Length: 90
Image 1: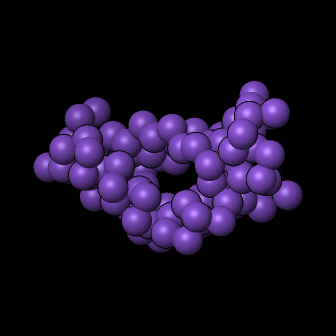
Image 2: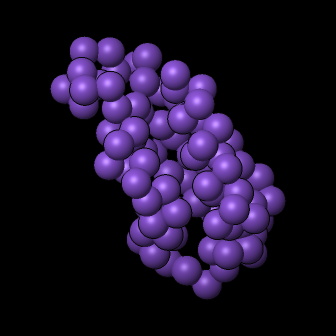
């Protein structure tokens, strides 16, 4: 089930940011028994590099990622670790 969530996260982020690189990891297995996991929501880590983040502060990048994932933040994701890198930083 979470493989579909990973695919959907990737699709949404690719569409929003046209990333140079993107890696989405399902960390849910590390949180078995955790309060958020009991409801079926997942824990994920994202590493994304995109020119769309150029000139953005870290908080703004994180907000942009949350916005791109929109409904998934309410229905599928309990925790999200974000590493958002501007391509100009490489």
